[in-house]
Every structure is written in C-alpha cells, then in structure tokens.
Image: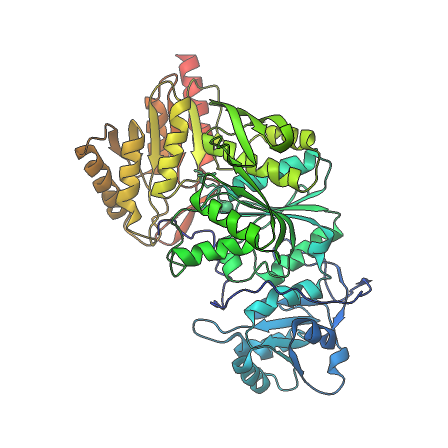
Length: 563
Ligand SMILES: Nc1ncnc2c1ncn2[C@@H]1O[C@H](COP(=O)(O)OP(=O)(O)OP(=O)(O)O)[C@@H](O)[C@H]1O
Ligand SMILES: [Mg+2]
C-alpha cells in the first residue's frame, strides 16, 4: 500500500503484461558450446549478452518449452543464438518474444524484429496472427501464454547458466539489497568468484553493470547469468522482487538456497491483495525453486512460509534475531552500537559462531543472520562466511554511515514508507545518546495516502523532524510537503514531542539538520538512499544524499576546527 514502486519501472518497459509465472524447467540434451560470431561482445549501454551460446535449434527449443513450431520446411534446424522481448534490442540470430501489452501487442513489431535479424518469434495465438501478417515467412513458436515460457526458453537458449552457478536468492519486503550485499561479502571471503544482482547494483566480480530494475526480465536475466559464467563467476547473490516472482522472471532458475526476510504491506498498487503478494513471495520456497529455505521466524508470514515449504518437502532453517528458542538458529548476546552490532549465532547441535555486522540497527542483525545462514546452508565454511559478512563496510544508501570527523552519527537510508521510517527510527534510537533527527520527504506521483503517515511516523519516532522534498516529479512540491506536515502536526497534537521544520530545498534541509546537531545526536537523511538524482517537474537534477551530506559534514567539521 505504501511503498513507491520506484525501482520496478523503466522507460524501456514497453510491453507490460500481467501473465502468471511458472516454475517449469526446460529439458535439454547436452549441446556443444561453440563461439557465436553473430553475437557481439557485451555492451555496457545495453543489457549484456554472452559471447557464445550453445546454438539451440528452433526445433529443439520448441520441444523444450512445449511450443508449436510454425514455419517453412527445415526451419526446425535454424539455430537460435540470443533472445529478447524488446524489438529494439533484437540482434541477428535472436528469438523475439512478442507479448500482449497494455495498448499494443509486441507482435506488431515482428517486421522490425525480423529486419534486425530475428530468426523467429515466440508468441501467443493472437500474436501469431499479427506476426504472420506483419512478417510473413518468419517462423513462429506458438505457446498459449508467452510470459511463462520466457524463463525456460531463455535458460535453454543460453545453456542453462544457473546450473553452473551457486545460486542464492533473497526475497521479502525489506532487507533484500542489504542481505545480498552481505552475502556477496561472505561469498568472497569463502574464496568464491561472485556475481550480484539487485536494486542498487548488478556486478560481475568488481565490474558494475547497469541495474535497470531489481530483477531483470527473464531473457535479460538469463543472458546476464551466461555472461557471468563466461567471466568466471561461480556464485551469485540475487535479490528477487515479488514482481519478478509474479511475472515468472526467475522461472527456469533453481537456487541452492533461498531466503525470506519479512513481509509488510507494500506494493499493493501492484498486487491484487496481500494474499497475492504473499503467494508471489512464497513461490520462491517451493521445491521447483530451491533446495533449502532460510526463513525469518520472527515474522508471522515467515512462519507461514516455513510451514508451507516444509510441507512441500523443502529443507527449512528458521532463524530468530529476537532469540526465540523455537527457531533453528537464533541471535544471543546482541550488542547494538552506532557502528554496528555483535551477536552470537546459536544453532542446532551446539553450533555457535560469534558474529558481527558493520551496519547499525537491530534489523541489520536479522539481515546478517539471513546472509550468514544462506551461505552456511550452501555449504560454505562458517568461519569464513562470518568473517566475510563482518567485513562488509556498508551498503550504498542502506543505513550508510557518513563520517567526516563529526561528533554525531550521520546516516543515509532508503526508508521511504511510513513503516520503514518507524522501523528505522526505532533502530537508531537505542544507539543515540542525544537527540534523534530525521530528514524526510515524500515522492510525487505515487501513493498520496502515505504522506501524512510518513509525517506522523517521523514526528512520533524522532526528536527533530526536517520535512523536505523527495522526488516531487510532476507534482507541486509544496502540496506534497503540506500533506506530510499535516500528518506530523496531527501526531504532535496527539502527544508526539518532536520539533518540526519544513525546508523544501533538500540541500538546505541537510545543512540545517547537521548545523543543529550536537555531540551524541543522530541525524538520519531518509528516503532516497543510493539515488543520484532528484526529479522535479519531469527533470532529473543530479542530487546525491551521500555526497551532499558528506560535503556538508566536511564543511561543518572544518568550520568548527577553524573557529
Ligand atoms: N530486515 C529489515 N527489516 C526491516 N526494515 C529493513 C530491513 N532491512 C532494511 N530495512 C529498511 O528498509 C530499507 C530498504 O532496505 P533494502 O534496500 O535492503 O531492502 P529491499 O528489500 O532491497 O528494498 P527494495 O524492495 O526497495 O529494493 C532500508 O533502507 C532500511 O530502512
Ligand atoms: Mg532492493
């Protein structure tokens, strides 16, 4: 209901489809891997593609995805060397997936795809008629519904890359990005060559790839996995959004371990209702998807997932950061501090590991446990994993500490929902000796109902509240601010004790917040996290909370030193 779905949309998203997902896997014989001269090397500006593919034939592909092949005699032998659902991204040798969209069917673009070198179109009955009219002679792979076939087809075309990787997936409302970074750190410490896929970054080893959405569409995702395999990656930490699960973007992938962080009401603009949202997340914990489920037993939906997964025959490890004895693993002796937390991870058969995480806040103990247990569950050395997670210095825009020598805690965080904001403030309160200040705004062109709720969450949770602009987008920034202010004032009328300031200019608000801070205080700059721009009246202006806050702090420290 509350969260902006800001990471899930992209201007490249042309043909939106609401098809269901499928965990059906392709059946494939052993295909020789041969260099594919038609596929150019990965291009940083585009979705990366592997240099070589197994060159599966159209006939073989039809058999593996259960499609009917329509075309001239002999077309079954034509090799397929790539796959895309975007007609503008077709490369010679590609299969073009044409799906129904909100206004047009992708098959309308079959002629463009053929002109760009597509060897066939994968489509549904409506699309087949359109494609046969638009591009006569272009072979058609006909399926009842395109979306469920995308993952299996992509996996087949790119040689089932996920089978060559240790696949680790994490889902839940909050903590996916943080946990995937911690997993990446643990994997590296255990000597693995890593890949990372998620909201903030997609990485092959140390090389960053453009991240357009949390989980790419199946053709792009499988191509990316194949590139990772080519570049020597052997283990992947992957954030799996519920959009991805609902749309079947991850079908055709089998994970060694999948992890569940938590579930709160969120993204309801997208999912029909909360049960739908739950069902989307729960898919990742079925035998088709995973061998082991690592599940947060402190969350009621986690307990439901654990029970369902176990009943379906998936091995389950439950954990409790709250120390619940009913969980398989629990955190004990937790010491929370402004620099992070230490705890003892206690498991079955007397196993225990002293662990720590460099990110402050109790929820990061849960994130660290999720990462550590996923990695131990994948068979990695526990001592190396614990050391690797402890060594992760931070996650961009996620409880990210900014240090310029100031005498108070300054943090940039991505919390942009009422719930996340309350959780964030509650997490920082115990490590704050002085006053807790929060700077926050609300996005325009997104759920309006959350604005007063965010204002109220800030007023209840903090001592000093700076309401400011987030991304107003096409809306009047002052109107957005007024809604947030109404919520804050209502909370004050009901007994909240915060001091309130409204400073529309975000940089000015950041300066005001740190100028007022005293030693021992905490200043939280919330809402935009890793984002590098601020969208005002349709124009994205460069704006980076981390940079603005760092520079302001450096200036402040120099001023104090000079005075
Ligand atoms: N385990 C957790 N429980 C509750 N809140 C959390 C947890 N981990 C992180 N958060 C909060 O949620 C925000 C988003 O965290 P993170 O980016 O790791 O989650 P995410 O699941 O990847 O989110 P998104 O769906 O927006 O990509 C953080 O900035 C923090 O305020
Ligand atoms: Mg994320």
